[in-house]
Image (cartoon, rainbow, N blue to C red; front, side):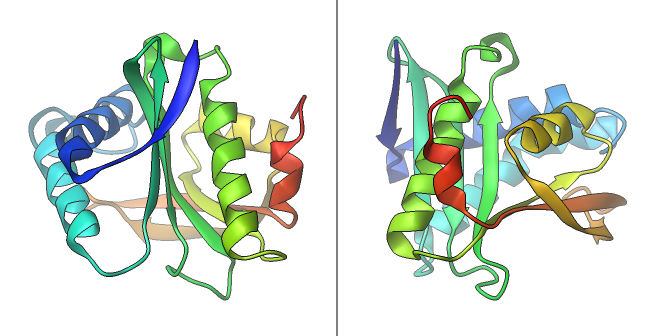
Length: 176
């Protein structure tokens, strides 16, 4: 059974571990192996500590399958308000994919986006070479509005796509 719960400061190591694990599974060939294997988890731990310590708005939900944490989603509502509400992270453990966990996390994020900023779109950035994620976002009705080269956390460059949902409420509907 799937449940979602708000993340707390005590969850920072868990979130960082889930984040790094997801990157290791999905970003091979996008980010250097040495970064993924040796530095990603410490880097993500530092990022999440800073986010939870910041005064900026942060909304994070952890997905649990039968009480075991299996993924998370994060909104940074004030990241680039002119673009909409920023969905910064959505990660589900590889061994848990295909159960609808990602869709449930996406729907929860869309519902929160609609609650805090009715009428504003939802958007996210994804590496173009992350074909599986791009396909999921396209199936969920995301429209690619921008393609650009970005700096990665590993200090390299990669092409990223900005997916956009003009009406996030559609992501909350059954069957999406």
